[in-house]
Length: 394
Image (cartoon, rainbow, N blue to C red):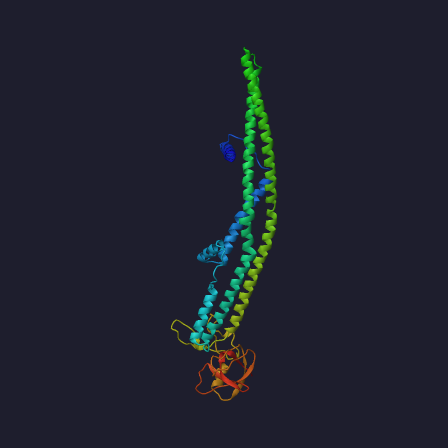
């Protein structure tokens, strides 16, 4: 019975407090009750915290979109995160494109210009995919996680204490209202008690009423002191939490620097990968020029150039280059010449000769050999070599 009585009393007290706050809040909205205003410093801190929360959420969500444009993948990662399970590893778009290119190049033949180019592009795309995966992991750890911890941790604590401060303010204003009413009632009772009234019973009743109102006034004053103390204490707690927003900004600044550095590393890697790819794709047989009819076109070569370069491109796409005329001239005459290897080349079969960039080999033509190939010789090793990988030496 005692426990039940205690619970009922506590429930009644809580209900009374809630009703008192609701009445005070409603009267404030209707302009029928005064409201205790927070000091300007605390109001500025509250505004700063709210602004920080709003923009942190926007930056965090848009960063997630930047790193993972696929909304279905983001939802899947969110679900796995809430289930406290690791999301399955999936191949990203650059890696998938790279694998398709490699498979196509292998099917077309790595010894052909197009097939070899596809393989080189595919390998570069896969390296870009790996760099993209590293960017996502680094950014999630060093940038997104601290922002999320603020939203789901620090700001939730601030919101909780701010709500408590609001309740304490409503209690304080309700106590002020009750004290004000008690004072007004006592003043009115004093005026009536001081009037000349006939009959001792009437005088006794007014004296009793006056004493009752005075006790109620004293009780209201005590309640006001208690609520004022609780409000001041909660305001101080909230202020200390809000002043930590400046430290949060400093921490997020360091995280932002980490994010920028991760992006810088990623873009630098991509630039280097594409630069290397451009060098590797700097020379292609002219008869692989691609048009709408898929026909071969032989560009007009430059008679003064021995090296395939950007100036001898037959297409602005950067993938089709004019072949060195002196190497083709070599196929029409007898004898051998020295040639420098421009790029690494892996032999597709035993009839070909693997090449290393910058090495010098001997080349000569063989009757009946494909126009895009020469016979190369390095010591005792001999095999076919693609002419687009060679620079004829004087």
